Image 1 (cartoon, rainbow over the protein chains, first blue to last red):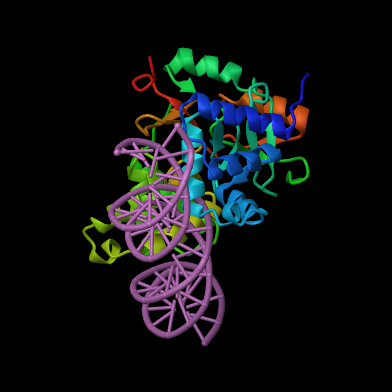
Image 2: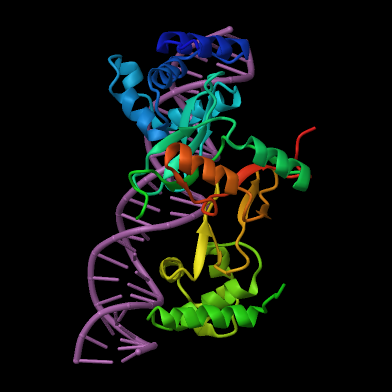
Length: 152
Length: 152
DNA sequence: ATGAGTGCAAAGTGTTTGCAACTAT
DNA sequence: ATAGTTGCAAACACTTTGCACTCAT
């Protein structure tokens, strides 16, 4: 199994950006770097906060609106993806082939737990044949209780 | 299979309200009636709108804040349940034993489709034994594309 | 009578939009 | 040069909170 560095992941994302004919701007580069450097799932606010701590005052000044718009364009370019959580903000992460995963949210501690990408394969097949519904399992977090928070 | 009328469902909910030692107020009665009468999943706004059309000016004047607070107390009394949708407002429905169901949201048309309550039983068992995660499958809608909206 | 429920105004998140200034191509 | 990006201010949708008043028990 090949694990990629933040630098490699960032470069790959930038390359894809160019491929798609999208403009390479400071904000986009910075935002991709933040996501490449983090293994976690970040909300728009988290990202804005990390940008605000950047050495370059230029990047540190990135406006929240820009963060949202940049996230939106990166999602459309399929460079990043977002996951909706029941409460609170959507979270974003790089689309890293070979790192696909589903999301579980603990209703107790709020932790996001990654689950195997094939967890819902059976369910998906069943829904497709029974209802003609094409499940998109990565787009929403499933909720429940993690081991630590589980009641009784 | 026994199907219950709106009246019966409303009565059962009111009974439960009393059982739980909760006060019976006009707002709560009206709100339960709205939900009992509707098979669909209603947002707080939907409910407020329906109340606003009520004959009784008293009920029609129900404030949105009250709707939210009433929904909250009914959820806590386990008389109703809410489902979170990726975009937009949470939706509420009566907890009707024998009518449990999961929720699928079409990303195309926004339709909510009910699915069999046991759809995720296998997944649930797998998550419990592998990760100690106790899945709560009814609390969030799964997303995807319905037959009509599915691409190609 | 007393504590729970309600209306109102206001604020709090998370996100989007209109417009003018700017910049990557 | 020009279309796509950005910053700013403002609005938006959904939900919560503080406070005084009212009502169910």
